[in-house]
Image (cartoon, rainbow over all chains, first blue to last red; front, top):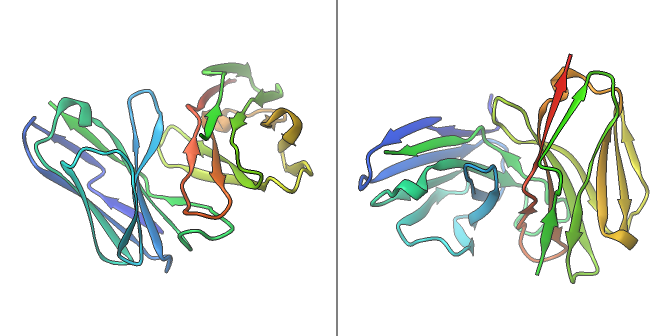
Length: 115
Length: 115
């Protein structure tokens, strides 16, 4: 069983469309994250939820809206897609929001291509 | 502000060579955590190691070793007797102690190990 799973793995869409990426973790963790990796491989945090509550919200356009229906799921919805949104989006989870370990378990990534 | 610098963009070695990946960090925190992650060509992010700032003991795990030097704000990673399977992008990351689990990643170093 995959610990952190994301769907879809690949997503190709036109500018202006709305799309969602889903993430589920079966590790029993309390905290989940979305990271964006751009074409130069740079990884940057976007959001974090702890037990369904938003705790980290970086400077991200409000076209991006995360939703956490329960602590095992964190979805990312993107409205009015732009070319610059093309990237690999990684979901991750950790046992606690501010625990000592800090180890993040990452999903395999979802590659979004906006044409 | 926190920052992680991985000055080596790409490194190319021949199998069995030793290779060191550099990581220099900046933080005003007196206590923090440092991490290394591996991203193989398949794209997932794999946790390698976590180091606490109050523990400067170097660590060895098989062919991997880490040299943490607080005086120079460096956390370098050495692969001994490199193998083709070591080919990947390696990321160094920093996290403040306390507060939320927000990893600040370096830009990554792409390691190519040739047979």
